[in-house]
Image (cartoon, rainbow, N blue to C red; front, top):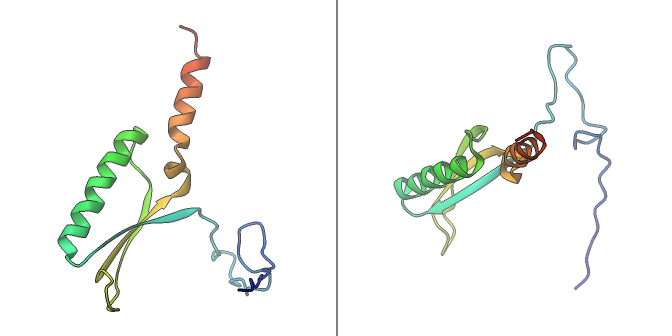
Length: 112
């Protein structure tokens, strides 16, 4: 098996340097770091319930609401695949635990 390497010429926000940019100064290609968290099931209600349960647990761990920019619903009608695909588009820093680390750092540096 041979591996093919594809090299992309990206700017600091991770988009192609040759990508046409919007012309009006009020418009922009945003560089927001969001990552999908996926829940797949043949039953939509079950996938949504699992996503809600995960969101509650993750927010409890984080100690604050997770920044979710979008909820994407898709389907997969291929054989042996769960039909529904629910994705929560979550802030990458929240998923990495940055607010937890900041609180721990602040807690250690504050006088007792």
